[in-house]
Every structure is written in structure tokens, then in C-alpha cells.
Image (cartoon, rainbow, N blue to C red; front, side):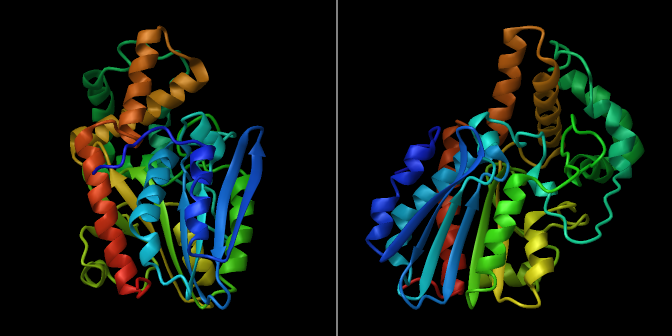
Length: 362
């Protein structure tokens, strides 16, 4: 039976506590305040002597936290009783961007994309492709009927496609930019409150446990209605090897050649900081929605640009605003039954493959 995908709230996450206590002697919860009525909530579940940790993080891009909550539901219902709980602690963090989740935005309270905010030492932050497309991304006017037209959007994007190519346009959009705080994929000028908090958690757990399995849950990018495992560019194994290990496909790496490169990426940060001192596998599970074909990419770009434009400058009518909201929902949390079915099926298959390979199941 497909688990209903509904708008989850904090109370729903806390209902997992009783089930967790069946398997762990210590279940501690924490709520870290980001903004008024916006908290990063978590459960740390431990039994004495646990030396391994299974860590799940959700909602780094706020609106994606709804699907992240369903992912945790599936894990609790289908896999919690199978985990070697006498060896493995469990850490569930939901969500990293609670303000964005509450307001159904991808960014946080400062318009920062948190997955462009996990910078490590002296990273090169220039994004020449974005600078060439900045005018396209930042229309300083209310969204009108023509703005929301995909046909018009294609012809507006066409000159940039011809000049930069599809990879250049993707880089402009996804690499991250640090020059315009009212535009998309803005990485911020300093570490955000959420980033500082999560970094402190990582500092503790990556220096405590002998092994950590970390899955970070996202939606939007990748093949249509398919779970794509996106490994860090710094993962020690190639994608073909990982596919065989997990008995799951597709798996890719966050590189310009295969997926896209990201400045300030959280998973990359973990690899850069802890790869020489800790034993872990940290990756991103990305559930595709619109797809990675030309039309899918166009709808994705339009959804992000229009949502940002509507946020800052409004819309000319309720009808236009509703259209924008629908595009965003369908990009990050679709209501389609086929997507829901695929979400559940791929979640189970990927979890089973990963947990089996790392010998975390009974």
C-alpha cells in the first residue's frame, strides 16, 4: 500500500517517538529554534555500546522536507525493526531548513540556499555563467501571464542555450551564486544559523562513531519519477562500483560532467572535512520530478525563477500566483499517484540495498 503523501508538520514527526523507544533505551529529542515557530527537530536514539550511526537529514531545501518526512515514515514502518539496533544508533534530523518548509520555499529566511552555504576553507565562488544570465534570473516586476508561459520561457531562454549550451545554463543555475541576495541559488555572505548548528552536530558525531551512514533527502533534480543517488565528487568509489554494491541504479556523482558541480554543498563539505579522519558513507538521495530532458529542465528553471520573482515582487493576479505555486509544488512535492508510487518503491529498494551492503540489517 502506498503511504499517503500529505503535508507533514512537527507533530507528525514527533509521533515516531513511541516506535523508536521499542528499539532504543535512550531516545532524546531536540528542537533548535531558527525563527519563531520554526525549529530543527531531531531524535537521537541510542543503546549502550553503539559504535555505528545511521543518520538521516531532510529539508535542507525547505519545501523538500515534506517528501523527506515521508521518507522517514517509510524507514520507520519498513526498516526500523530490521536495524541492528544493539550495534547502530539512529539520528533523524527534520528539517534543516524549517522556515523554508513552513513557508513552502526552497530557501531559508534570508533567501539563502543552504546547500550552497556549507563552504570549506577557500573555495572559488565565481560563477561566470550565472553572471551572463543574471538578467534572465532577476526580473524586478510582478509575475504576469506571459512570464508564466512555458512557450515564452523557452524563447527567452533560447539565446542563453545557444551561447552557453545546456551545461552552461545548468551551471549558471545550480553551481550557486554569491552576488545577488534576491536571486535564486544564493549562497549567502556568511554561515547561516542552520549551517552553524548542523556543522556542530557533524563535528560531534563524525568524531564519536566508528562508522556513519548518512543519507540526505532531496527532490526535484534527476530523471523523471526516479530516485537518483548522487554521490559526492569526493566519494572514494566510482558509480559503477556503487551500483553493484547497492544493487541499485542510477547512481551518479556531483560533477560538472555527470550531474552538476556545486559550491557550498553539504555532502562535499563532509567529505572534505572528515574523509581523512572518519569512516563514513555520506550521500544525497534525489527524487526526480520534472525530469532531466529539455522540457523538464525548462519547467524546473521557470518554476524556480517565477517563485523567486513572485516572492519579491508579487503577481499580477491570483490566477497567475496559483499557477506559480502549482509549478513549485509539482517540482518538489508532486501529487501525482505515479510519482508517489515510484517514491515509495525506490525508497525501499535503495534503503534495502544500502543498508544491506553496510551490514546494518539483522
